[in-house]
Structures are given as structure tokens and as C-alpha cells.
Length: 321
Image (cartoon, rainbow, N blue to C red; front, side, top):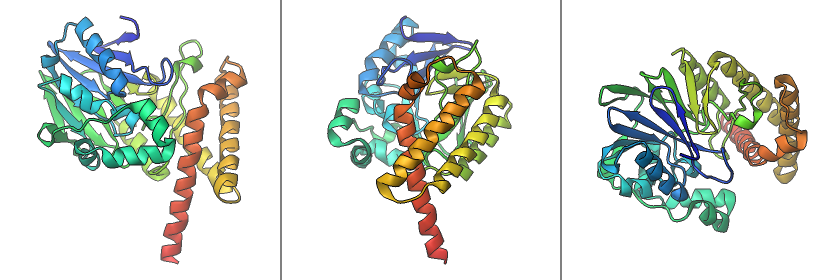
């Protein structure tokens, strides 16, 4: 099926159709005639999920779990609509995110504050609530058994405080959402992936992100399944790159002068320079303008996230002074 990539251990990566091709993946885990869906994309992604399940021979009634790594709308905007189509599925979500799945009003408002109401509606449509009785809280250490296939939940803040990663014991791999960064296939060089950290406009915490990455690396995973975009191996190398780049991004933020728009522009320019240096280090073959075009939205959000983090650091320092 077009837009679907088969990986080992019954894992399928489905292009969610968000913004551009191969920007965001939805993962389907097929096991013993049952399925779990990891992240849902947006409302517009729901027909793609149902078609991919059908092509895999899985009727909607046999989907047992919809697992959200976190509730940012490129990952969870379609959760309510998809749950309506999957009558026997439970929704797994971080305890901090559950209330926003039951009543998505504040989630919509927070996203609109970043993108504007018109663009938010164009990107995500109307958010559909999920009945509370269908939600399972993704507490740290929770174990799930799907027909003998075991998953373990890890609380992994850093990108967001409502973020989890999901260990798949069969695949010896994590579904990482945004905690293990971005790895777009356009930047692969002879099958060798690269990775870039991703912050968020409201809850970036570099110390927590470092800790979450190390916690996953301690499992010695054979692969990571990123939402942006899907399967990567050589995990230890990529983890080291993430640590290095998180520290470099933080240094850029600390060095920025001014306030408001002027500071944002300076941080963004610093992030673009990091990308240029990383392109040379990793041997990316795309022209510089194409690299920056592909990363434009991510770099803008990263600059916003670093700015909010700086403001929070200053506020905490003022409180303790």
C-alpha cells in the first residue's frame, strides 16, 4: 500500500499526510491478528489508518490499543476521531494529557496560541473528545500485554511534560514520539541516519531530555521508531549526537541578546548555523537551501521553545534571588 513501509517484527510505518510527505509517521504494530496504533496524526490521517489496517487484514474491532506518545496535535489530533472507528480500543495517554483527550478545549486553545485559530483548524480540524472510560493512564512502568506481546511505558519528559516512550519487548525497540528527536529520511547518507533534537514552545527541559534519552539507551535498543520519521538504528551513535546537539542549542539560547522578536531571530539564526555545521559533519548531500526549507518549521518551533525555556529559567532565578 502506498505510504506504508513494512519494518521487522510486524511494525508498519504509515505516512500520516501531515504537511508534506514523510514528515510524520503513524506506527501500527500487528501481532496475532490484533493491532496497536502508536500516535494518530490528525483527523485527516484517520482514513489512512483504517485503510492500512484493512490492507494488513486487521478489522477495526481487532485494534486493542491507541497509544499516544504525547498530546501535541500532529501526534494526537486524530485520536478522538480514530477511537470512534475502533470500538474495542483503549486509549493510552500520559496522566497529564488524559483530561485534554476527554475535553480538548484547552488543547485547542494552546495550539491556536502558537499557530493562530485559522491555521490550527486548517491543520487539525475539529478535535473529538474521548470517553473517560476508554482511557488508560500511561503511568511510568505500566506494562501492557497484547496477545503475548509486551509493551512497557516510560515517562520521558524533556520535549514535553506529558510525553511517554513505549518499549516493545518483541522488537527490542522504542516508539519515541519526539523524545529521540527528528530524523528525516531526506538526510540519510547511504542508509546512515542523522538526528536533530526537537523542543516545544512551552515545556522544553534540556536536563530532563538528557535523562530521558539516557534512560532509553540503557535498554540497549536495536531500533527507535520516531514519529518524524520512523525507524532508525545505530542508536548509540544517534543518542550521542542528540546529547551534543541539545547542549549546543542551549548554548545558542544563552548567548542570544535582547528580548522578544529580536532574541527569537538571533536564536533562529544560531539554530540555522548549527544545521549548516551538522550538514557538513554528517555529509548531507542536499543543497543548503533545501535543508533549511525542510527544517524551517522545526527550527522556528525550536527557537520558540528555547525562548520560553530561557524565560522560565529567569523567572525561577528571580524567585530564588
